[in-house]
Image 1: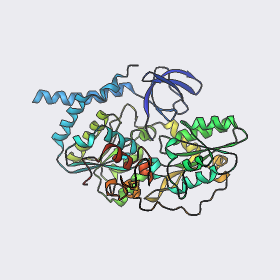
Image 2 (image 1 turned 120 degrees about the horizontal axis):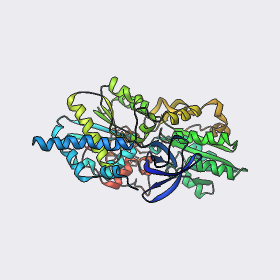
Image 3 (image 1 turned 30 degrees about the vertical axis):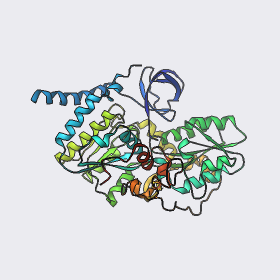
Image 4 (image 1 turned 90 degrees about the horizontal axis):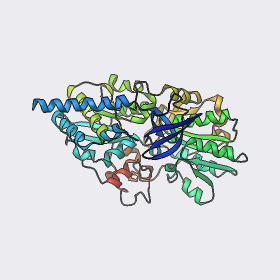
Length: 76
Length: 369
Ligand code: SF4
């Protein structure tokens, strides 16, 4: 029920955006994230964009772990 | 579209590296509760229980909105859909949930105009297109969904749509976690906090878990690497003897959440007491429409008053939702209760713990807990 999927904003008109995910486009409401821009990634839940995805954080979170794993290789 | 980051969060090699790390540091017994039903399903689907060391058990919690909705609200929706000139709209998951004496699916079969919508805005569209009818949205959900109900009410207000109203049965998560901890039936050592509820509310409402109960809690995403990395973060805290609220799912959860959406939510609704199936009334975990918007309150508009609601005989959903038993301990499970013919809501909802156990097998870890 609290599932949300990442999608990319391809166009905006008023409080409605067209988003693309896995090659499929659909319309979502942007009432909850009025600041979104074209090309942003958003989390889509029940026809609404609920949060803007921070791509930088997406990369950083993984990097943190990759560093831990690499460090492991060095010491072993 | 190149969502590179998404691919990496499904990477088998990274996942195996994290599993190795968890095995390396995990010594103490750890009961971790996944609050959210979406996590329950993701954990089963990716076989996460099977790859964790035996001292770690994953326990499913109360985070399936369909499952915790008490019969009273289903009875309200049933009563309203029987009124002449009403179009009842709802999300698909609520259709088959049995109330005290009927379900929406049964009412639809008997001729009621019940329509499944994907978005609350679809319900507003239906109201606009059918000015001679009353369109009612039966709203359930947590903080992920409730702002969308508020946005629909605000949209209807803005457009002057007077034939739209809502049966509100939405709930708030953080104080429900407090209620679980206060009864402390299972001795939880760590919380896997719901990613998408947190996208809206941020981390502040969870601080009491660490500060008052000294239990670590991590907001975790839904891809396999997310879940494993989040479990590693929890285990690390448990082994170090610390308790903090951390975010693994940084890309979708800023610490402050989505304040704009929460403002919309609390413009229309205010916190109230709520009944949770199997738990009872928990103060401050419900949402009621503020007096300024009371014309959108369907229960008031239609003068519905449910005198008494009945529980489902023999269904142990309440204990399942509190993590006290697993579905395997319910006598109905897999015999008289299956997804095609469910006895209780935890088998109806695809995110219900009983349905997840049935679909994905019985799960190796956590069942003995
Ligand atoms: S198996 Fe069926 S009857 Fe038993 S607790 Fe789950 S939903 Fe209720």
